[in-house]
Image 1: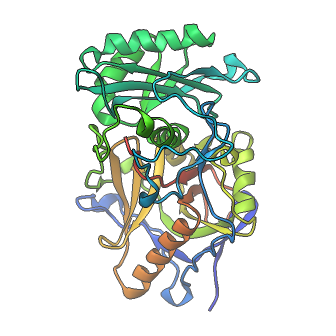
Image 2: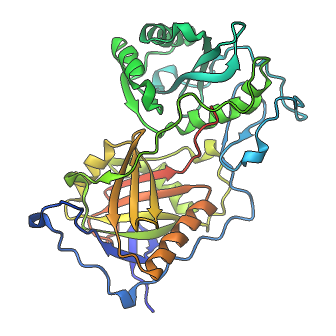
Image 3: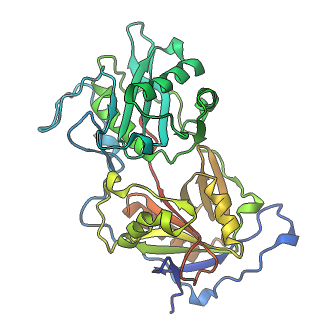
Length: 397
């Protein structure tokens, strides 16, 4: 049994399957795709990457603690017990009612052009018995950190606008070009507040540093607050809508499940701006992934005869994850804060289902890390766009 090989930016990708992208329901036959899938006899099932002997843990580093808190690898049973206020040796004692206003002294304020923002209620009651709201702002490197509490009767775009302006004033940094946020329910308020400050509001779940910091704050701050209410569900839960039909301009010719060694993934991220016009990376050092260099990270490679236009369109989507949905026999693309597309379907056979399950298992063994690559040809020695993606559970607040 042979294995086809795709090359992404000079690194060999073990291509286990190559599938044509079928027409979506209602898609006119005049634009049917001519790409041919590899003969079934030549297809090979993907083998899940072996997990590293060291734990794969995502962690965020905060000015509120001298130690990094684990995030992605933490399990539900490790959630903070409101009655357990023990602090591990070496941790600083955090005042849960204190607000944060921090800028790394080694950071260049002019270089911080993008912020990540959350403006939502917390599982904390004030003296009136009403939920406390909080603004949390950071950048992707957590060099900038800012928090402020608000009463629930002061939640509007004017309050948010003034608070964002105060971040700039208090820390001596310019207003950013863009602010990412992940709660669709707050889009109107956030967009209006940012618009009045001349800042572009971008709905996106690529707020990885913010999401991990919120998880850390839940354990080190909120759960230790005197007004903490254990078991409170988030007021504004993240959307997970039913996937819709992929727009015409996002179709490729065919796609493949592929794998790339973790060492090569790091190289791709480090050279992303130099090598590609399109794509997005993640700060692997900040996230604290502890994978062996040889660990295979799963991904999806897409071939298109119009690779550059396709990559350009994809670049504006704020792509955050891809998922093999074995129930629907589909590949699902998640973007923005609440957009999910059926990127492609495949024939639902035991072999195809097993392969999709193996790809998801490989992703899980890598702590949710995966990637999307767009190429002119699956056998070419480069790609037009490269996105590093990460599955993260919704924040506990």
